[in-house]
Amino acid sequence: MTGWSFGSTVYGGAWSTPQMRALFDDAARTRRWIDLLVVLAEVQAEHGVIPAEAARQIADACASLVVDAAFLEECRAGYESTAHSTMGLIGAVARRAGPLGAQWFYFGATVQDIADSWLMLTLRDARALLIADLDRAIAACAMQCRRHRDTLAPGRTHGQQGLPITFGFKAAGWLAEMRRHRARVDEAAARMDIGQLAGGVGTLSALGPRALDVQARFFARIGLRVPDMSWTASRDILVEWAQLLALVGGTADRIGHEIYNLQRDEIGEVREPALAQGVGSITMPHKRNPETAEHIGTLARVVRANAALLSESVVHDHERDGRAWKVEWHAVPELTMAAGKALALLAALLDGLEIDAARMRANLMASGGFALSEGLMLALAPHVGKQAAHKMIQALAEKARRDGLSFPEAARGDAAIVAKLGAGEIERLLDPRAQIGHCQGLIDRLLGAQS
Image (tube, helix red, strand yellow):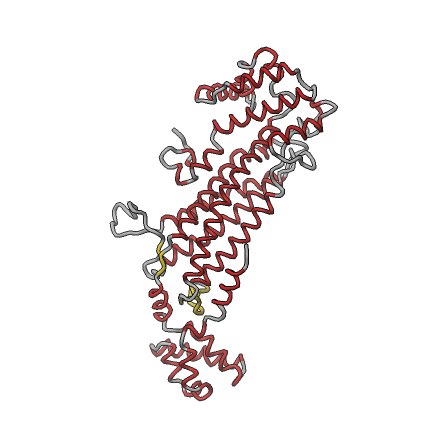
C-alpha cells in the first residue's frame, strides 16, 4: 500500500514513465549507492587511505549482495532505529563484508557525498529520457507547422477573436519555445554531472594528504566531473534544474491548455487523439474529454510546486543544512518524473492531434467577420490618418452590432469607406487570407532555422 501517487501500483503510470520511475526506485538507488561505495573503497585502497584487504572484502560482499525486499527492510529498520540516513545501509553491508571490510566501509565520506554523486548520475540518465521526449515533441510540432502552414484559423487575444492567423503559425510559436528549452537543457547540462566527495564540512579532511587525488580518481571512475569547489551548501545547480523543468512543463501546460480550450464543443477546432478503448465519462457515454491535455496541466503544477519548494534550498546555514538539502530527496525525483511524463504525453498529443480546418474557418466567419477590421483600418489610414481611421472602423463595428449586421455587410454599405477605398479593394480586404500578415513567412523562417 502507498499513499504516494507516483508509487501507486494502479495509478503510478499517470505520474511518471516506467523508465523514469525506475531511476528513482528504492532498489535502484540503493544498488547504485552500494556500487559507488565499492568504487570509493577501491580508490581509497589505491591511495593508502584504507587497507587493501578491507577494500577487497567490501567489493566481494557487495558483488554478491542482492538488493531485494529483505535487504531494503534491513536498511529501513536500521534507519528508523538510528534516525540517520545511511546507518541502516552501513550496518546491512557491514554485516556481510567481513571483519576488516565492516570497519572501513563508507570511510571518509558523508551522506551527502554519496547522495549527491548518485543524484548527478541519475539526473544524467533522466536528462537523456527527457531530451528524447522533448525531441519527439519538437518533431511533432514541426510536422503540424508544415501541415497547417496555410490553414486559416482565428487568432485570439483576451479570449476574443482578434485577427486571422494560420494554425501552423500557432504551432510555430510552440515550436520556437520548445527549441529554446532544448538549448537550455544543453546549457544546464554543462553545469551538471559534477561529483561530490568532500566530507563533513566540505574540506576532504578525512581522506588524508592525497585527498584531492582520491577525489579526482573517484570521479573519473564513476564518470563525473571534478567540481571547482565543494558544493554541500551550494544547491544552485539543482535549483536551476528544477526551474528549467518548470519552464519546460509550463510550455507543455500552455500547449495542453490551448488544445483543451480549442476542443470545447463551442469551438471544436482541434481534438486530441482518441484512445482505442478510451472512456470519457462513465455516466455520459458521448463524452470525448481532453484527458491528455488536462493531465499535462496537472503534472506541470506538480513540477512548479516542487520547483518552488526546491528554491528554498538555495538558502543554507553554514556548511551543511539538512532542512534545506533533504528537501531535494522528495522534490527532485518527483518534479523530474512529473516533467518526464508531461513531455511524453505532449509528444503523443502533438503527433496525433486532429485538426478541423473547416471548423476553424467557420468560426472565423461565425463571429461576424469582425476580426477583419484591422485591414480596413490600415487601408484607410493613408486617406484620413491612423487615428481617424481607427475611429471610423470602431464606429462601423459598433453600428454593425447594433443593426445585427456582419462586419463585411456593414463595410460594403458604408458610403464613406467605399468612397475612400472602392468596392474592389474592400472585397479584397474582406478575404481572411489577405489579413494573415506574414504567418507563412514566419513559419518558413522558423522551419528553415536549425535548433
